[in-house]
Image 1: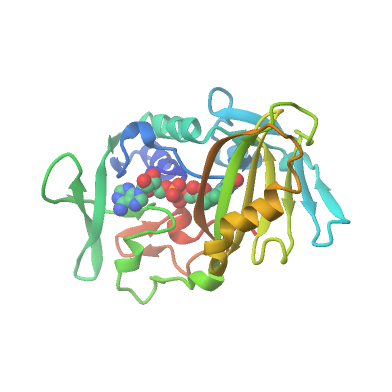
Image 2: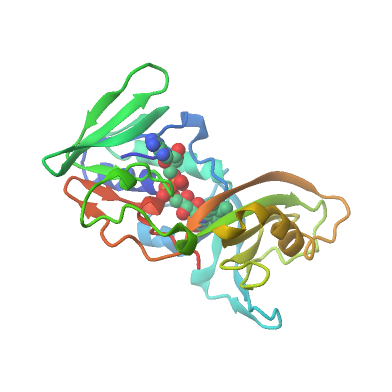
Length: 291
Ligand SMILES: Cc1cc2nc3c(=O)[nH]c(=O)nc-3n(C[C@H](O)[C@H](O)[C@H](O)COP(=O)(O)OP(=O)(O)OC[C@H]3O[C@@H](n4cnc5c(N)ncnc54)[C@H](O)[C@@H]3O)c2cc1C
C-alpha cells in the first residue's frame, strides 16, 4: 500500500481486516502523516457507510449541521440541511494519525515511514511490487507483493509510469483539475459568520472553473479557500484575497494560522482502477470530485 493518506490508510484497514498481510509505506515520517492542505470538511454519512467511527476526540475541530450553496448571482442560496448533509470539520493531522493508528490495529498491517516509492516493478505485463528508497539509507530496494495499491495522491508517480491500455496515465490537467489556495483565519470574536454551516459559492467570475469556500473551523475561525482553473495559478493568491477574503472578513484584527495550496481533480474517476497486480485509490484514481 503506497501512501498513508486518507485513501491508503482506509484501504489498509480493510485489507488488514480481511486477513491480508499489508505493508503500508509513506515518504513522510510517521508524525507528519495526515498533514495536508485541505478544507478539512467531511460529510457525516461516509463514516456510516464505511463503518468507521466519526471524529470525536482531538481529530474533531467542529461539527456542522449542513451546507449553504450560494448561486452565481449571490441572490439565491440552497440550504442543505438533510441530516445526511451534517458533517465534521477535522483537525487534519490528528484525523490522519487516527486513521493510521486504526489501520495498524486492523490485523497484520505494518508501517514503513520515510520510504519513497520510485516505480512499479512490472514483469510479464503484471505489477509485482514497488522499488523504494528508504530515506534513512542509501540505495533502493524492492518490495514485492501479490497486489500493489497506489494511494500516492494527486501527483501519483506510479500510475503515470504504467504502460497499460486500461489505465489512463495522464489526465488533462488544464481541463480536469483546479488549483486551490486556502487560509485558516481566526477572527478573534464570534458573530461574523454562521458557525453551523459550511458555505460554498459557485461563481465563474470570482472563482473561474471552481468555487469559493468558507468553512467554520470553530466559533471564531474560518477555513477560507478558492479553487480555479490551473491557468490562474499565478494569480490565485490575488483572487483569493479579492474574492474570498476581503468581502467576507470584516474584523480589523485577525490571525492567519495556516496557509497553503494544492491541486484537486474535478472529473470522473479513471476508466479502470485495476490492472494485473495493481489497484489505484483516492486522488491517484481521481476518485474525488468536489464539484
Ligand atoms: C486545498 C484543498 C482543499 C481540500 N478540501 C477538501 C475538503 O474540505 N474535504 C474533502 O473531503 N477533501 C478535500 N480535498 C481533497 C482531499 O484532500 C483529497 O481528496 C484527499 O486527501 C485524497 O486522499 P489520498 O489518500 O488519495 O491522497 P493524499 O491525502 O494526498 O495522500 C497521499 C499520501 O501518499 C504519500 N506519497 C505520495 N507520493 C509518494 C511516494 N512516491 N512514495 C511514498 N509515499 C508517497 C504522501 O506523503 C501522502 O501521505 C482538498 C484538497 C485540497 C488540495
